[in-house]
Image: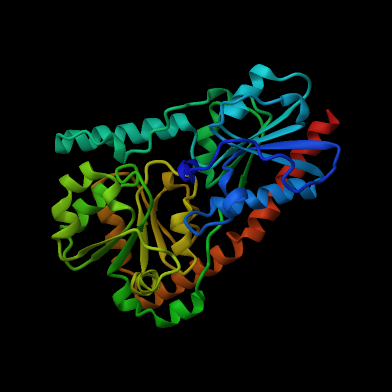
Amino acid sequence: MRKRLKCKTKKKIIKNYFKTSYPRNVLISYIIYPFQKGMTYAHTNSREVLEIAKIFRDCHYNVYIVDYDYEGDIDYAKYDVIFGFGDPMVNSFYRREGSLTTIYYGTGMHVFSQNHATLKRVEEVFKKTGVWMPESGRIVAKAWSIQTTLVDNIITLGNDQVIQSYRQFFDRRIYSVPVTCYKIFDYQEILAKKLFTEAKKHFLWFGSMGFIHKGLDLLLEVFKELPDIHLHICGQINKEQQFVKYYHKELYDTPNIHTYGYVDIQSLLFKELIIKCGFVIFPSCAEGEPSSVMNVMCYGLVPVVTSTAGIRIKNFGLEIKQLNRQSIIDSIKKAQNFSADDLGARSLACAEDVTANHSIEKFGKELEKALKEILKNKQEK
């Protein structure tokens, strides 16, 4: 889930961030650091939460913000709405007095689905390696079950599979909004420089923590057997030492596998990689439309992903049908059958779609529409 990325800041409630004097108050329980430190290019959630706050302000709410894991005392009587997730959301059901609208913000799959999927993948890797690597999963220790069953409404990021992960626990309306991407470069320039005959031989894995969760082990095993096709790996690889120790040969001593570590999306290296690669490959077991992948799809890298990655591949991407080596191989082979013209057309369609549908403006518009409908329906009851 996307909530992991945080800066170390003093945990407190930011009171009335915009210094407004509206008759209603909202408490956003999510991440607090963007309101203290500003937006960062490390993750799109910093920009998104600032947009969320602006939307509530424009809906005439005084905006208060708290970290999702804040366990201190909160006077819930002063709030009309709680938006987000975490301890403040859950504790509101124990300590509230009077009417309170609760809106859960699901930035990944339901935690039960995510934890089950990631633990099964960790177990799978243990069975083939003899090594337990739970740190390379994405295990959420707190389930916070109340917030995905008792809230008034849910707003998620991602495709229909993400929505369905909540549906078995929630019988009211679930809304979906698009995750955003950071578009630093001009995609038309990137596509103009791309040699599609060569690009189809180059796949990019661009992700954060949880290498087993995100299928990197499977990719290493597959690509070492495909010497003519290249895998480029960008992520904080040294954060998961057990994984690096076991897969060291694949990561660093395999000619067609290139490991870079963390790569800044504003860097020249990032630009070189998005020109070189034709595809982004991401066989994750549970996501909510990861912004890391969207950050390269906006330049036309065609997605080769599992449905559980939460990404809408539309008519330009390729789905990895099952989360196993053979399905990954089948998808790579299908990608290799694309002509240069076909890959070029898919790349353009991908870049245009992401640019149109995953901007901060689109996110804001869809979120505002959902919030206005939720708040209006609540007031009419």
